[in-house]
Length: 280
Image (tube, rainbow, N blue to C red; front, side, top):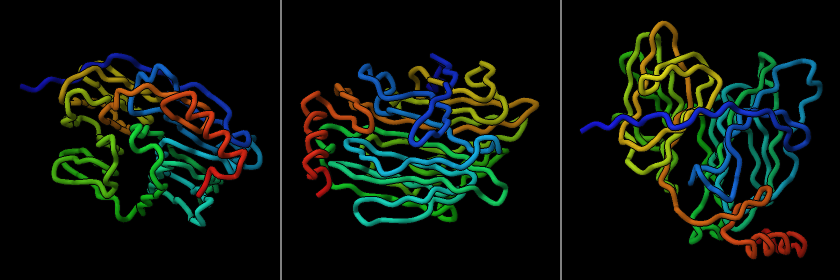
């Protein structure tokens, strides 16, 4: 029997300043309450107003105990890190970084030909058993992200599966679904999601009926439990990021760019930074 997931909450993103003065729309942030387990943070960033002046970014900073996911729509982000990696995340590209035991990196935005920079960053938690693994990247070029197209739905699949299309990002502990969904007007779409998985949708263009409730951009939809996400458009198209994942059900201790399980582990991270042993 199909059990459509109801909407349990709609969150209006709040403007915050991060990094070297970057203005972001933030829907969720790391908290000890961990109500969106395994997801910790979701930011929507854009630099499209000329009065903002010079573009600021995210100079060298540490991470431990989490995965950061950068998904670009327009413009690009130049990154480099303490492991010697460097590169450019361009339009449609994805970088899935597993920070593990620790990494230092910077992310510096660059405008595209239209002058715009537009994208998202998602933080996904790591379970306690994997928080101190070696860091790694899965960098996916836009051309290699598969697209599911059927009956008015156009869906880029980063990780997880839509129909017979599987995303290229694999071996993620939370078994996540992370997809960019575009639905034309007068389109109906359903997506199976395992019962018990935390499920969120960030609507950033247009309007749709989500489980029968009208939702308009820009907002984060939090779903209740069930096994199917149901979305229907009427007179206008819609575009949203859909992400779901298995919760770890562990206590967390967030502190800035670190998310560990205990206060002592946070203190150790700070000590490692001070002693120069954070990155090995």
